[in-house]
Every structure is written in C-alpha cells, then in structure tokens.
Length: 340
Ligand SMILES: *[C@@H]1O[C@H](CO)[C@@H](O)[C@H](O)[C@H]1NC(C)=O
Ligand SMILES: *[C@@H]1O[C@H](CO)[C@@H](O)[C@H](O)[C@H]1NC(C)=O
Image (tube, rainbow, N blue to C red; front, side, top):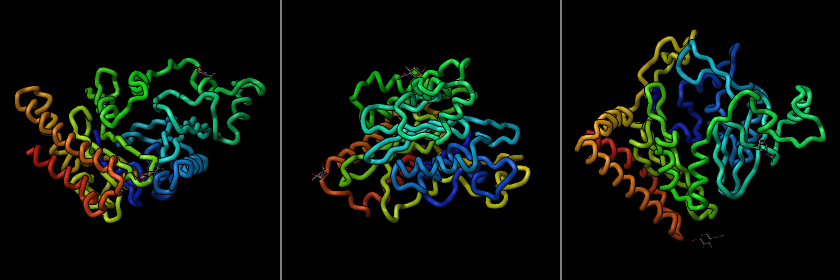
C-alpha cells in the first residue's frame, strides 16, 4: 500500500499524493478529478464548510470525476464520492453521482459517510439539473417525493453495509475522542481492514469545538492500520513545525506520476515514520511478549497526548502557539524512538 502522510489533509498549496498531480498538471485528454484532490482543493479554497462544498461542486461541474485510485497505469475506476465537510458551526454531507450531487446540512446528531448514498429527502443544496435529469431518465416523476438515495442508488446493487455508522449508533450520543479511535480500530466490524489485498491507511480523528476560544485538534496516525498505530495530536498554529519524517520522498520530474505515460514504475514512497512503523507492525502481529510490551508503550504515549489535549480543551485560555507548534513533531519523534 501507499505510504500515508498526515500532512495530506492540511490545506497547503503543495500536492502530496502522486495522483493529485493529475488534477493539477496540464490539461490532459482524460483530465479527471479524484475524491482526494477534491478534498484537498476544497480545504484550500473554502474557509467554511459551505464554501468548501461550493468549491468541490464547482470543480465537479468543470471536470467531472474519476481516475485511478492506485498508482497503476492499468487500473481505472470511475466512482461516486461522498464527503463529510465540517466546520465549528455546521456539517454538510455531500454525495455525488457522476456530475450530479445533493447535500444535506446538519448541526447536531451523528452521521457516517459510507459507500452507500445516505441523503434522502432532506436536501439543502443540489445540482441545478438534479431533478430534471432524474425525470428525463424516468427515475422520478414531478410531484413524487424526491428521495435522492432511493432514486440514485443502483437498483440491483445491494446496499453496502455501513459498519462505522452502526458502531456509532450503538454508542448513542455518548461520543468521545476515544470512542472514535476505538471505532476506527475495530476489525470485527470491518471498519479497520488488514487483509492481503487491502489495508486501512492513515486515520484521522478531529475535534472542532464550537467555542472559538478552544483550538481544533486533529489526531493523525500517519501510519497504516489504526489498530496498530498511535493517534498523535496536531493543532494548527502559525509557524507550525513541519514533520519531514511523515512526508513521502519527492521525485521531482522523475516522479512516475509526472512522466508520460504515467505510472510505469512504482517508486518507494515510504516515509521515515512509515518505515519505522513497519517494524512495529511485524512485532505487534507476532503477538509475543515483545509485541505486548510495545503495544503497551504505544498506548501509553497515545494516552499522554489525549490527556494533554483534554487539558487544553478544558482550559479557558487558548494554548500557547509556541508550545503546540512542535506538538506533532515531538510525538512522531518519540514514536520513532520506540520503534528502534
Ligand atoms: C429514502 O429511500 C431509502 C432507500 O430506499 C429508504 O431507506 C428511506 O426510508 C427513504 N427515506 C424517506 C424519508 O422516504
Ligand atoms: C467560550 O469559552 C470561554 C472560556 O472558557 C468562556 O469564557 C466563554 O463563555 C465561552 N463562550 C461560549 C459562547 O460558551
């Protein structure tokens, strides 16, 4: 699997994943936009959740969607994408089918975005031709209730399960950072996958307090398989210390993503933390004494981070930028030391 870098989700003007180049580089015959590119560009261009949504649907209208999910020239997938776009005040679920889309705004409750469509009749924003298209296809008659999920889900396609949503529903309203981490780590439910062909990559839990005097805190693993990774806190501040140990190496013009034809070679994109963590995963999987000891140490490090963040969230003073600027850097540094 590809290496994962926590920096990927940060709104910076620098593409991180190779295939993002496809959206950025010169227009090509099969110029397409991927979900990840949309995420990144939405973050870059929108200051609020609604603005990010507007940016994504504008990109969708201009470029359509599709493309390779993997660095493999022979694979080409077209797919529908769903987004959960959140700021401190509100959240939007945006679901897209080709160039069509519908979005629902909500300000409370629990929501999970899965591989099935979840927007039904509460539609707060939609593609201007969504209904006329559905009507032209004979899927919907004006006057009938417009249920987006019902109209746009494939008739034969069985609904994929939504394990994350079910796990969340079972917890009721009582959701903490630890709850989210536990759900992401849950292999029994199928949320966390570690199989021959598929491995859950980097995971993120974000807390966006409604009160602006508390900072938003993001917990990144930066490594695959959350059940064997540590969630480490990150807070946006000016002059945040960049963490090169979680950045994939750059290949410049030699990057197979930039050559023509593309993706003929697969370069080693593992970053330093990823490599160190590969060793840890082997040890943990062996289930020996050493694995237990390592797991305990890792969870202890994670717990310290969570507790420190709880303090920051409970405090009435905003955190000192000089102190939190190195937060993620220091956590990664400590983690790598454990893995040696
Ligand atoms: C919309 O359609 C879905 C899928 O058929 C169904 O499960 C759901 O109950 C419908 N919702 C409403 C509000 O009609
Ligand atoms: C936000 O937090 C500060 C500091 O804890 C508090 O003084 C203020 O009343 C809070 N504001 C709201 C709207 O709750």
